Image 1 (cartoon, rainbow, N blue to C red):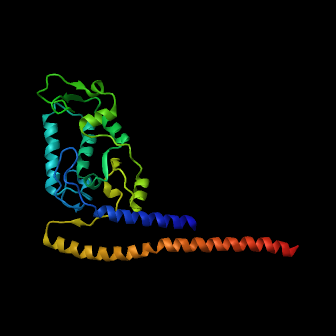
Image 2: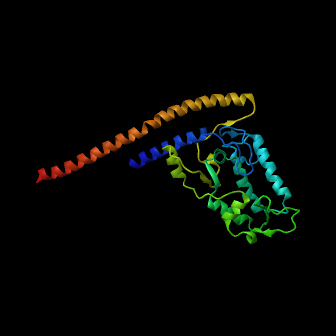
Image 3: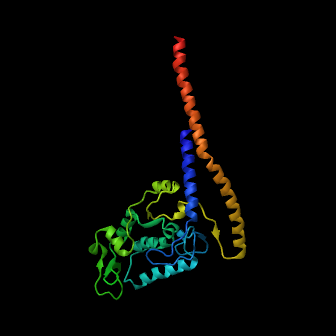
Amino acid sequence: MLFILVNFALANQLEKVGQLVNKQQCLRQSPKFEIKYELQTVQNIRGVFFCDEYSKRTCCSEKNFNDLKMKLFRDYSMAQSVSQQCQQVYQHIVCAECDGDIGQGVRRGLCPRVCQRLYDSCKDDLFQYDDNAHKLRFCQKNDAICSYLKVIESNPERFCQDLGFPQNENDQLENWIDNRFHNVQQDPLCFDGIPSSKYWPKIEPIGDDKQQKESNSSSSKNNRTQQTVYEKYFEKLPYLFLALVVIFMMYQAIYIINKKFGGIMNR
């Protein structure tokens, strides 16, 4: 019984924090490519085919997704060559610029294991250190001399930093949720490679046509009504939990008293 009540309390905490996070404002622009976010709060965007794994909870408009695609393809087109495995991991991290948690500042920088994965995938690719930008980049077609990444840099953290994706050690999601629930100021989490739509409450998709917008408006009203009922229900859970704990303790006390004094009387 106690285990079930604790799970209910944790579910209440997660639901409350999820609602708060989904209402949080988006930042002005993305961290690396400085994409200017056109959405004020996270949305579920339909019709996105590039970086679509992040479109279910994003600060990016369809135009933002296209801008990000052009910046990424420009990097590839200027590069001498980029291996498929390096492209796959690099693109997943670049696309995260449109992830809702990144866009809101909930997450900042790469978790160490994500940074390590990027390094391992690209260590056999050619890179060049740009002295003007003070950044590491893919070897370009007009570069006279380039070197394999594993020759230039052996430290994954420094590699990610020089590539424009600084590493962040904070991966304690449960602590972050607990602090947010109790309104305690805290540092951003690191990006763990998982789209934020996998963590937080689902956001209803938005479409382009009028009928879809009207449907979403109606659905939004129903969802708000359901959420209000849900919130009222969960607001009572702490009191219910406390009441049950008191009843349980009283039962235990009565049992101990009966056992003790009942044993004496039997003597």
